[in-house]
Image 1 (cartoon, helix red, strand yellow):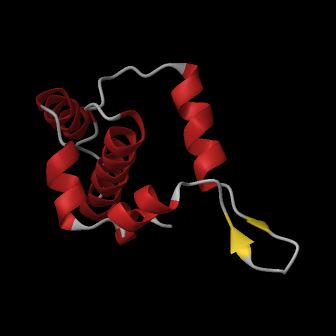
Image 2: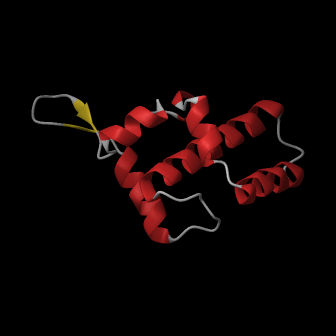
Length: 99
């Protein structure tokens, strides 16, 4: 799943005041970046916040623990199963909510 696949509902549900401040601060610090780059960063952070909220049932608060980063990698790494289908460890209910 890519960050562009996040539904608007997931974006609104997971955005915490803390993340909103982080996004604003990030934009201020990176004013020299192109508008498309900043838009991509914001989209990725919204996706990650939505994933976090669904996975841990609480709003994201930065910084996060190393275990959270590792879980994100485990959830999103794709592999082929024995039948040759692409699969990941992301729980299907979370995958559907993020679609």
